[in-house]
Length: 314
View 1 (cartoon, rainbow, N blue to C red):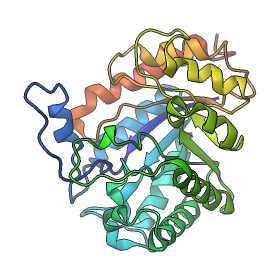
View 2: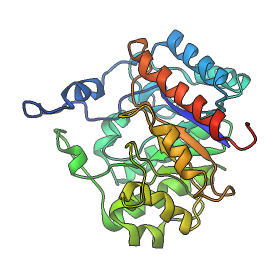
View 3: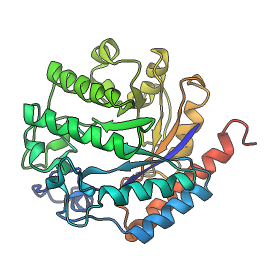
């Protein structure tokens, strides 16, 4: 079973320039943290400490959000200042494997979270865009030596989620599916399995279950406190199981430190073992020492859940 943590090399997912929210908006500070920067927000000594703590906690997988944090040979023009060379990334992947952490790449191609693509984030669904996506996916698969999974993101692609962005674009209906199939096909062509966030299901259940391939790994996510099937985001775990999808349920200490443990407790008896691949923790902060409390808290939550609920652990 995977016990995974999402770690950001790049944190440039949100639009680089945003309007100011109205007075009293609770997420104002968060919007400032999220704004894209032309440099890498990543502290290597802190990150190494983080991965060592993951190992000590019994975690066995790390999902690396790469974004513009790598100076890709195919598209070096999207790299920010301080981005890693492919050679450095390869060395780091070897170190992670030596720690017992399986590295999985993540490039989020949702139009709400693709600021890392630089100028190509404004070329969505064009021939230029498809070419860049194809080349980046192929290069990353090669760098990771054909990883078991490739996380494509694809969450929150709605007008509501882009309400503070100065430039907003979203795909919908058949175009969303066209681009989704394209990205999945590129991943599979490179001998890897696609993995996505499942929130498209929340608003388009009929479409989702008619068109979503069973080969795509699903990460439904819910960061709340209460767990009951009357909550649509919780019910999605049950619906995915009913329709036979492989899942990696996702929790977070975003709002409540206990959410990850509650996610594990809820999902373990309700998802068949052969379809429950593991669990993913998502702190959602840059890999900087100033946020160490948030990151360390996330790891402690995974360790606690693993020791309490992992089959055979006790």
